[in-house]
Structures are given as structure tokens and as C-alpha cells.
Amino acid sequence: MRIHLPNSAWLGNIDPFLRRFDPRDQKSLRITANKKWISVHPMILAMIASLGQVVPRGNIACEPLEARSKHYFERMRLFKFLGIDSGIEMTEHEPAGRFVPLTQIKNSSSLTSFITEMIPLLHLTPAHAEPIRYIVSELVRNVIEHAESMHGAFVAAQYYAKSNSIRIGISDSGIGIRRTINRSYNAPDDLSAIRLALMPGVTGTTRREGGTEQNAGAGLFFIKSIAAVNSDFFAIYSGTGFYKLLKQRARRRHVLHADPFDDRHSAGNDFPSWPGTAVGIDMKLDENETFSALLDHVRETYARAVRERRRTRFKKPIFV
Amino acid sequence: MTVAVRPLAGAFAENKDLARDIRLQKILPALERGEIVTVDFADVTGATQSFIHALVSDLFRKYGNDVLDRILFKNCNETVQKVITIVSEYMQESA
Image (tube, rainbow over all chains, first blue to last red; front, top):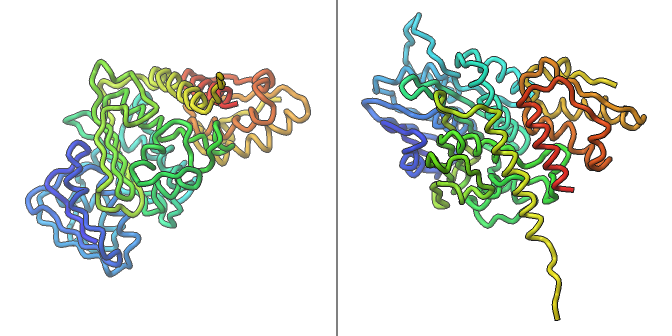
């Protein structure tokens, strides 16, 4: 496999980075990079870290980074998880910044500890911490429960002062969304599976309305809704499918849709096949709705979606 | 009977495994005995939909919507109240 760290790859312009990923030959991984400056979303760090777990150690090669921003990747622990000595020396007493370095989470109790430790690292106020811990908990728990990856989830997050926003990336090298959803549904391709996974009340564990006692099928819908209401980016990539929630127009951002294709978005089903699932989300801190107000919007859409789905299954009277 | 969530699930109630344990080990036996159960969220600052679903959804399946007459939610902050409301409405819509 080959992956290239570009000059710039954020959720808004991540598509060319994904298109350039070469998934052939899964026994080796070669990483190349822009020579001048590399500036990428935490989702990309999480993706590369999880990718590195499925390749035999010793078969991962990363060309020596020359970019001036190379220290960032060492500080975010990317090379540690790839088992590579980067040769990059960190300056002592470098300011810590507001970031959560790459962290591998394999089980439920580690997730609980991670969430507790994550918030102080990002220096968040309680109001800002609320949606962020919610998002991380639901996304990582999805990996632990459904991805069937012995390597668990990789998570990274970073605060960006210029945009006053938190960007979060989570990735796994598991079975992917399509195989998970198709335990109960019949998604013909990866993008269709992503679409189903984002709908409220759809879970791979059952087709029954209300879900099972442990799964409601609402986690991804809630997270997409948080991004939509705040007019932030949200991206999800699994297999050849890629869905990106675009920034919603100011007047329409409170209108939540059960079907993610009804939101302002871009999507494709012809991306290089990603072995697992990767998710990225941005969250602006200066103009977001309170978490409580956001739940009001979610509540309305969530219940309506169930009603509408039940209605489609109603039998119609036959008039002769 | 009162079940305090904070000592069992922490300040941010997100661990579904713990929610299931609370349901199976505390709430269900009390309901089986015919008791009214008070779930106390004192000092719980937040809860995920997944946690609340794992805590109560199966109770709707076992006892129907009337379970809401037998289980009370105490000391819930605004967001915890809303998450409980969302899950309760969802389970009733799904019945």
C-alpha cells in the first residue's frame, strides 16, 4: 500500500488525499510526504496509524520527512504506532499545545479513561466538552462493538486557534461498515452501507424498530446531526465509499434529515478501498449551539424517522 | 428503591456495559418485585444515547410503555433529561 502526506489535507479538501491512496499489496506500506510543509487533519493521522497495524512490522517504510512541520508527526506519536524510528528529535520544553496525540483504544474501560483524560488536554470549557466527549465516546464504542479489529480504534484530536475549532479523527482496520450493516440489511455497495449507517434507527444488529437492548442504531445519526446543526464538516470513509457532510447553509442548518443524502453533502463509491472505517469531524467552538438545544433538533427528527419508516410498511387497503 | 448512577457509571455515563449491568442487576430485579425504581443521576454531568438506550430500552420491551409509571428519573440535568426523553419517545414510537 502507498499513502502520501500532502501539503494540505483537511476535511474540506481531503478527497485528493484519499484518491491518491493505493491499497494494493496489503503486506507492505510505503509513506511519502510533501517536502516543504505538511498540514493535515487528525483523521489522516488516525488512518495511517490504523493502516500500519495490518502490515507486518518491518514492512513499513516512511521516507525521511523534510517538511518543517515534521515534528508534529513525532509529537502526535505517528511513528511510534508505525514502529519506525523517525530520527526526528523533539525540542525539550516545547509548548504542549492543545492536542490529543494518537491513542489506541481497544476496550470499553480504556475508552472511559481516555474520555476523562482527553478533555483537560484540549483545555475545553464544560459547554464545549459536552458534545466532544459525546462524539468520541459514540464513535470509539462503535469500533469496539462492531469493527472486529484486534487493534481497536485510533483517535487523535487537535485544537486550532486560527479557526477556534477542534478537529477529531478516529480510524480502525476492522471489517468496515458494509459487512457490519449487512448482518441485517443488504447494502449493495459501501456507500449504500454508509448511507444506512447514518440513518436513525438502523443498526447491523437487527432490522427491528427500536434496535436491540444494546444497540439503537442512532450513534452516527446523532454525530452527523451535531455537525449539521453547527455547520461543521463530518466525513466517513469505509471500503470504496466516502461521505462528507458539507457545511450547511446558515438558514437550513437546523433542518435535520434522516437520510444523509438529503443533507448538503458530497459522496462517492469509487474511492480506493479503505480496509476499515475512518471518521473525521470538525467542531467550531465560537458559534456552536448549546448541546441541549441541539438535542431538541435531534429529538424531533429521530422520532419522525421511525414514524415515517413504519408508515412505509403499512399495508394499504384494497378497494375493488 | 433508588439506584445511584454516578457511583456505578461515573460523571459521564457512556459505558453501555455498565448500563446493562445496572439494568440487569439493580433495576430489573426491583421491577420484578413490584417496586417503583428511582434512577438517581445526581452528579452525572452527561449521558450518551447509547448508555440510556442500554439502560432502559429492554424495560419497554418487557413491560410496555407503562414502565414509565414505575421508573422515575431523579436529579437529571437538562441534557440528561433530554437524552432520556429522546430514548423514551423512540422506544414508544418503535413499539
